[in-house]
Length: 430
Ligand code: BGC
Image 1: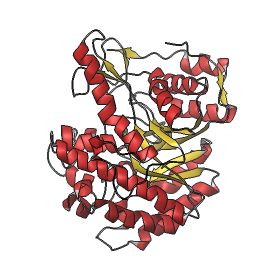
Image 2: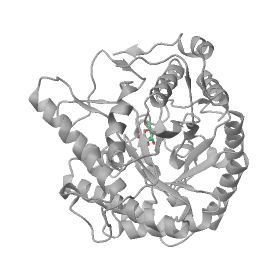
Image 3: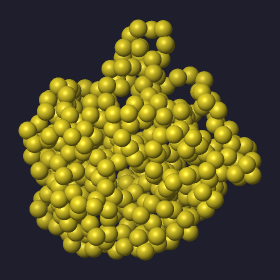
Image 4: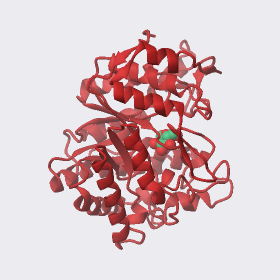
């Protein structure tokens, strides 16, 4: 592994944070994840997204805090169930509330980016079969049209869909996401196909309404390495996983090219560029034995036991940008560190790896801002640069948050900053 420099310059890389609506807002009962959380046993700690960070009410305070930290850009979600709580019925107040927030973000000198689907959607969409349904794409595009028409004067950067692969595998293969099906391979394929078509058509739709828009999607990618490098089954399965979990979507969603794995080329998508940036969510690496999610032993890990492996970002991104030129926007990267004991080191290592890579990284969105509601694992895992007191809702900037602010202010990390924030920290090995 190449040595990670202690000091570095950010160059032109712009830094911000990423969040998702249901994970932070609280108060919304009209979405699929609220319904899911009401089924006993589905969420590890029994929590629901009703509380979350309370951002729906506290957004002014959060925007002020972002500005205080000097953030340059902010990726946030617009929750479909708030805008269209019943089919075809728009909630103008919800749209106005999002506009107010976006204007405030802009006024604070922070470039907003809006995600149009991040794991959750209205309960009525779930009830009709969600992305598996043949009318799913048109139904979602109706919402996309409304939001973009309404907000394109305050938003230039759009992320159509967050991690279709994680969404679909959770919902139709492993069953830990709604609708909780397992090994439903045909449904899984349909869901992925529809999400990919949805992205491609949204790409054109958004540009029709707002020609200056920058549109992409957040692709969850990770290296898949054979658990035992000499084992031919592990080696073959590593390739199969990488291909099915990410490569087929890379080609469909960035390049509009649908392989047979996704059911072949759709009539309404023409091959060609369907992105203005390559959006990458990067967290960890998988050690493969079959179709399952394992990791190597004796490696640095976070508090969810995910391997920490900065180099893996380059391993997955380099081949993508050879075929689909950047710019690369890291739409998510972050770690579960409940005591903020190693987040500064994690930040340093990932940023240093990016800026010294020679690859066209242009944006970096740290996941996440304030500790938030982590889907099926609930309230316990802490990913934030800002600590959340779950009872009072109080926010306190963590040491890693101060370090991040300093990196932005200094446009990089100095030896002195490294000695103070990074050198004292170490990862746990497992
Ligand atoms: C998702 C986020 C999630 C994060 C950490 C990503 O896969 O996009 O919503 O909170 O991982 O678990």
